[in-house]
Length: 177
Image (cartoon, rainbow, N blue to C red; front, top):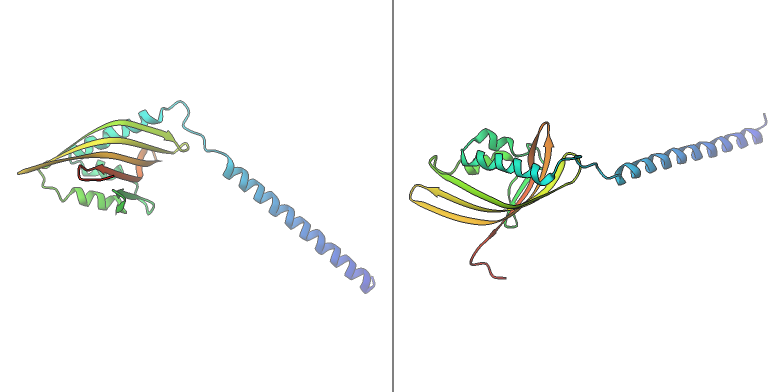
């Protein structure tokens, strides 16, 4: 083979290789886009609001009973966890939540009523929800009440639901609009 035909063969093989690489890249990008664009399936036959309501009832009972382990298990144990109150990030871990609740005297009663619970599936293992709440805290020598709305992002981990993100907004009588 002379140098001209060798050079021609090398250039042709190089062009074919570039075309093959481009085709593979295009196929990978197409598959990634299809997977990303495909909506996650919701949990078939399960009402998200009822699922959320059942979770919140168990969590509410755990808080009222000072059941630290059940409270701890209600919150995600990973770096994505965040809990906001009135627009401010207050907690970055479930241990911070448990620690804050542990600052109340042991005889403290925390009673929360929930209403207008709503939820929607965000995939088979996630849901977003909201609820109105009214909480009464009774400690030795004092009591106070507050209420508002919280919004929540839940994630199913193993067999149970966990708070992944939350935001509590309280209604205050001194708040101006």
